[in-house]
Length: 234
Image (cartoon, rainbow, N blue to C red):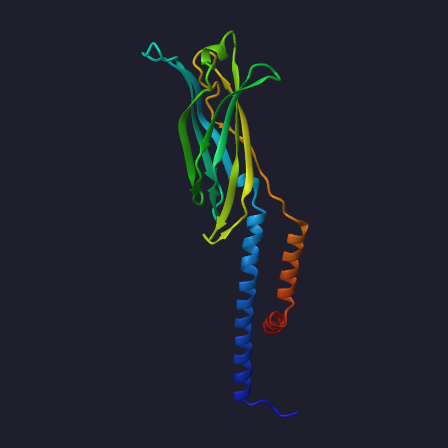
């Protein structure tokens, strides 16, 4: 068997180095999009935080005799994106306000829609406004002979998770709710702490998605180019 001269060895080393580079590029280009895709599908519920930092129901007196007094809900909704690698795209968020007239008797008070908005990575957003109660309902009527008033806030809408501005998840339904105890005299919330909304983000990750991702990893690692890298390293 003929011995290899220096030029042959240099050629073999160069070819091995080129193979290693090409294999690394293929592995990167194959696995990176798959990894981003999978993380968008399997995002954790705790990545989103919603809380009511302010909530008050109050009657507003008018000087106009012909105009009836009106009742408003003043609220400040705090939304936080806890992900340090993903931004959020919220669709319209529908808020529904109600209160418990009895243990099983819920009375609708008002509705409000927060227009769609973008929330950047690790950013906080405050939505603060007032909503007029439905006609015929006043705080005086709600709080009459009550030691406390239990109000309820429900939120429903859609959200998309975005990574690197180009990779986006499908729209996912988000639902949140919370009970707020109000002082019957002032109409302010009894707790001095912000009221956290319990929430759920609906997404269905098929077992086939995870299986496909694992198969792709194994196939990439076991490809001839990847095996060449392993052989050269050894």
